[in-house]
Image 1: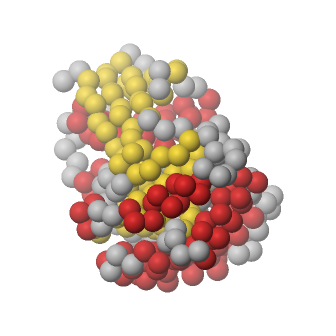
Image 2: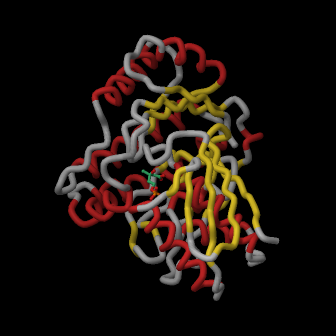
Amino acid sequence: MSSTTAKACANIALIKYWGKRNEELMLPTKSSLSVSLESLKTSTKVSFNYEDRLSINGCNIQGDAFTKFITFLNKFRKKFEIDKHFAVESFNNFPTAAGLASSSSSFAALAQALNNLCAVNLDTKGLSILARLGSGSASRSVYGGFVVWHKGLLHDGSDCFAQQLFTKDHWPEFRIIVVILQSAQKKISSSSGMQISVATSKFYNDWVAHSELRLNDMIEAIKQKNLANVGALAELDCLEMHQAMQDSTPAINYFNDKTVAVMDMIKKLRISGVQCYFTIDAGPNVKIITDTSNQNSVLDKLKTVDGIEQIIVSKIA
Ligand code: PMV
């Protein structure tokens, strides 16, 4: 085999990951939980080559994104004693690096393609561990459905992997509406932001403690398909994570005016009886948690908000 293609979907965390306890092995300070999105896909073709190359959506990549890619390839080569170089062509059907979790689907697809091309024969747990070495959230994108990423306790990271909790069939009515307010690259990478928060944020340890407790409540709420509880827990977790970011020195703020306007719109819509909740990652875009019976009311209201670049409605992958 001289080339192979693999696909993965991005995931959105409902209980967030923000901060590592080991930078090299990408071990998180806490467990997290996500939902994989059918409409946010990455397709990655990998071939053997005389040197390492990366293109995303047809553009040759250099700079920080290339360095992150090479760091991952070096970890892969060392772990499996592989002495090869690779040409990687990746295609995202959504904006890259705008807090839309493109690294989750990119490294999950890349891990799968490398596994196939080099015949490493990893099972899904092994794939999750490999994808984690590229980007923490990628450990969750090797699965569809609702996924938990266990923080693990061991120093070598062998118990730090993701696991599917429920498939998409558990909750076919569940929807995420992705509201793209700015498709340009984010100001501060998640890796740098995490390091700053862990080292300086006064609220960081409180958020970790609260969030760890919320994880079991979230699993129970998903099990019961209780949208109000899922939404309320996800919103609180997101707001506390952003509080921990903003309490850092220097303060990290991923929101812009439009982010705040969409958050306000969702809160007002909820008071009027529409079930909808928000979550936001390391960028200004907003993801709305809702279901099929509330989706059209949310979409109608979004038409009244200025400055939205794109709206993507997604089912669970
Ligand atoms: O995997 P990274 O390094 O892109 O970090 C993702 C961090 C958040 O998206 C903010 C939260 C999460 O759990 O996905």
